[in-house]
Image 1: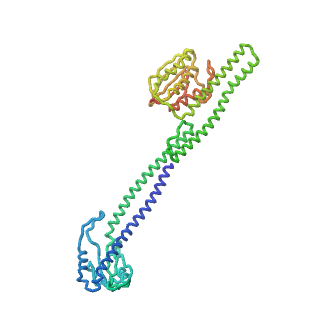
Image 2: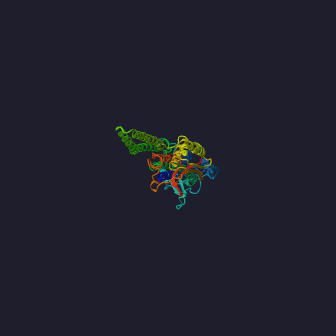
Image 3: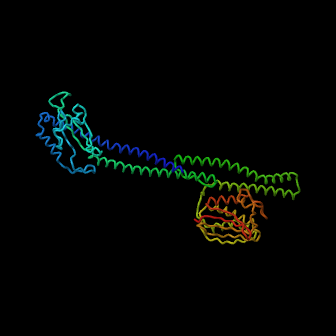
Length: 479
């Protein structure tokens, strides 16, 4: 499982658990919170009404009291209001008063007057100077039928001090089912908003996971390309920890590659220079013996030739090193392939004339994108090889194919072909085949061609033709 997916799943799991916990707490606290608010309201109402009726309860003639009559009228009223989206059509308070013995002497519902409520907690506890409240179901089997009762003591106002006599109890009752719609609405709002918050968090998590996975994948692809020894540049990873890691890897890569490259280069260069140095050393020793003029001239020419070979080897090697260390093209422009080939053929016109070679040119104008100088050098190396391995009076053919928006440039010669043992080595550095009428090459031309074409996003390969000779197949993207 990819690390980005693991992080996303872990993030979502943690988010889900946190959301589940928070939602449970919120939903679980809504109902008790609303009930506590209802109880607080009932306490204030009961205390207020108990104070208002205290004097009349003490006098004992409450049936003719105007205040109690108004309470009765309140119970008979109806309303039509909307509170926070919930419609209210009835008044839900029930008010009853008991005397000092717990006998009901007033009831807005007019059903329990004369009954004893002395054993109900609201009356029982209040008569003993405690906070009296109870919640009782009207239907024992229905938890939604609970009614909350909150009582307040009716005190003798003619007495002073804290120990005033309790002469009765006033209870205000309200069914808890009346607050059910408010609780449900609050819970729905919490759930709805939690869903949107969870969805937004999930989208953020997916976005972060995608970004992280993309950055890690880019870094992974870069590391794999380096492992394959491909020409690749560090992708843009931003100014963050992943970017710092990528830059550290690139720096380490350059140091390791540089060290290994120098070691390999020095070993190879030392090996390749042994032959010309030995030839120069031998010729110089023979010259010190004062040979005849003819031999002296021969030895001097050998020294000059071997010295020229060393210079050519070093120059070619420097060119190859430059393109091998280059990760991308520094200059890119539109190039007409016909114009480019014309320039290359002009460069080698003397060599072509010396061997009396014929050039068959079957290339049509096509535009490619690249570095004109590097491509001119690379194709020049291929033409140089074609000339070197062609017999006198032979033909070199340049023709093309168009395939999948790519230009395939074909260069055919009529030489002896590439031996089977050399096919897999032909692009190796310093590897070269003997030429019939020319000095051995440096073996750096084809590696240079391969590096240049690779920089242009193309490929090059060689194959023997059935009728004899070699075909170079150069593939470049049309631009």
